[in-house]
Image (tube, rainbow, N blue to C red; front, side, top):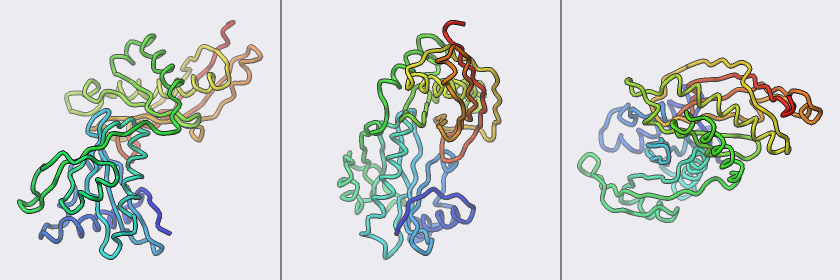
Length: 298
């Protein structure tokens, strides 16, 4: 059975990049390393493995803006074409893009791949460029709808609450791009939150993380029909790497613990959770927060 996954270990990334080079660069006498660019650390990477754990298909998505993304470096190994592997990669990348709030994906398709992308709903906008002065590419785009599990009304309610009561959230354009009852993902305007080094402000990362955690607690209250004042009691953040591209923050039931039932008895409720901030597959900052929910009567 063919599975689609994210490369994890150095060995998996080596095999992932090797197939990319072998199929997309080697036939045109380009050296190893030419299959990578400056967006690798900012990207979502996917690969298909066969039953023997050989990498047989690869693809990459990087977000080019708060609501836009670009797919590049799609490749399927010799002898594996026609098995639906490319479609698996595209579907996996699109699924993650939808959760991250991407509404339009673009790509540059080699001439022989245009029919493949057309079948997947991409519109051909015409000639883009020639790679190595030889290989014609056409630009293709596709509009994406929000993830099917996304709870629009609750997400819009939380987003409105932020923008009306916390001016910084409105200035940063913090938005809820995905909430399904278990997981919340947010993003913000990359240009507004960029410093002179062209990376995200540490303060913006902290704000995005704390509000995402606050938002998760808010959603749990709304799911149970309870009300309370949510207060951040303690927060700590670890910055692991600079964020050069559009950032997102996410937390979920797997990263949180707490019990809101005391609220119904007029007592305080507490939540402890972790929020992960990044712009690709890797976590660039980890925030741990302790939130207290005060009954409205206090």
